[in-house]
Length: 363
Image (cartoon, rainbow, N blue to C red; front, side, top):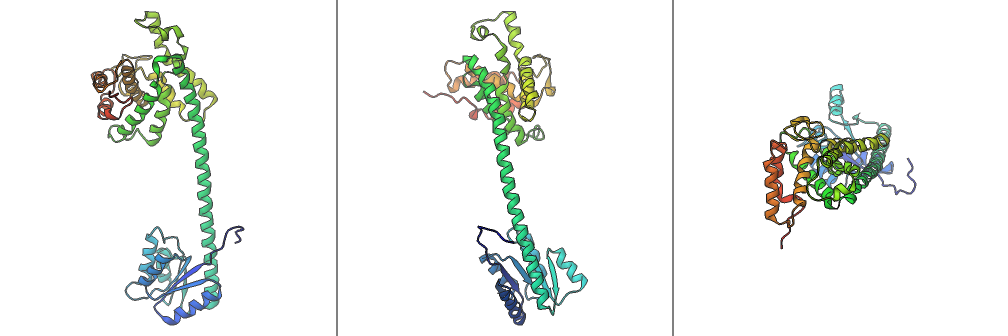
């Protein structure tokens, strides 16, 4: 097989036989074929030669001192570095049982002794060709996998960028949410990673879940783009109409994302983003909104985001973000365990408090 532009390496054939005459005959055959013979009279010597330079084919005798060919072949196939090297047994033990044993151990062929020179030449040449084709196929598969992985990463990045752009719309309209989306995103990721090691959540949380919630949680407040700007800028107590308008942002946010999903159904982040937007104000005791879900009926992604959202909202109201004030915010989250929040998630959230964003400001 011709590979233009690629330098050709002369194949090395390792011959393992404890009979010098056999070694000499096979060595001459391999040399006349234009290949490089490497000779060993024992399995130990053969292993040493392989460690120096891996051959493209091994011609292996069965009956040898210390370690026979069967055991040596078995060890070669157990080693990730040598298991793909083709092994051809050349032995006087050529009964059906002997051949079956050799093939079961991973040999590609079996030649009986006394061997015919033409037979050896043809089988060596054929198996070298097969080995070369196998190596080229594996190389092609690795390249193809690399290309597909690269394309998948590019598509995922494009999907993320769309959602990041949507999330930015919310932050632009509400000055009080500076860094809120990013903090919630980072804390959701850390919390999900920690929950993955808890027996209560290990079956629900995968690496894919962790990557998705980091992106999807940024859109929890996307519905706020429907709230009039003067409401967002207003300080003090809201009247009932303003409160109800604010509450509507959860359902409105989910509806916005559902419309986006209709046009981009390939976006794998949107289903989780939709459930987070709709249920991030659900309460563990069922008294939240928009539909009053309770306990584990609330999607796990929303239960995680609810805690991260509330914590960062509390921190955002602080005039000074020192360690003492952050601890007070954590205490409020802890007090909401079992009513506002899933108590098992709160327990893990408090364990990672030193890693949470934003960090305490030290003066």
